[in-house]
Length: 337
Image (tube, rainbow, N blue to C red; front, side):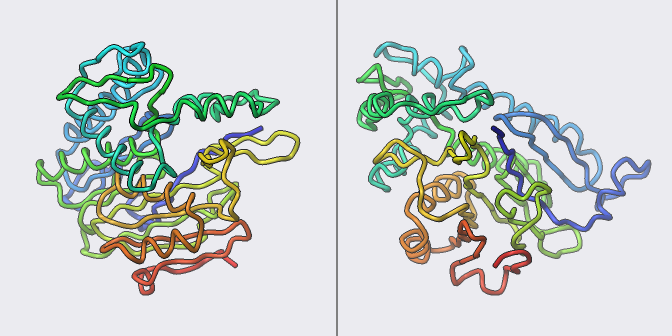
């Protein structure tokens, strides 16, 4: 069994990397910092001198939300809600904002996407590298019975779970929200060029310093070396992918991945390997990439075509690439069928 860590590869001019660590720092020099948050490696790259303190502040933001939205850290808001036994819990403004965003997408998708899947997600536990069996159907049906978006009651900053067995999991939108908050902070600090990469959620600020677009690679599913299947030319945009190869395990040669069909409780099987959303908002891209994966190719593509300023790329299990009309002049297929 393996767990694959999904990475969107930024195909930025490699000479940028050669400048890092040079003694003399110009306004065009990238300064990067990495850390491990949200169960993934995150990288933030900014351009110009005197950016170290700003980078450090970004990682303070990551640290804050890594706790606040965690289902396992006991001092986090979501952990406290999930273990409140139906009693009201006072939480931060950010938690309320993200919960409301998750509730909206749950209702918009008619429950295809649902932030109250915590019991089911815990049951499958795609972080466990030692699993040799999958949950029983009885266990799955029991977990499904706890999924209920109407169990969440919000009054001001107080959250009450009307069904104490219902558990929240914000994993489908948290990284997108955090990326947006980091970008918001960086813009306040007058950063005009940079890249926020939260392990697959890529958010760019402006253009590169030479006023050209960023080149972002979309990973070929299950490619051991991260080979891109396509590249995108983007500026001041979010690129978010949901894929079967991000979190999964194999048992008896059968693939089980984290994108769950909430009508059955089992991993969705619809001939898709990944969906990538390109838009302005990372939190919206996060939710939409999952929703459109669960919708399937035809419904998902039609839905994105109906939205303004939002595009999508669909990769099927046989590595065929489909994309919405607005990407015609921005995408290059490099390793697809």
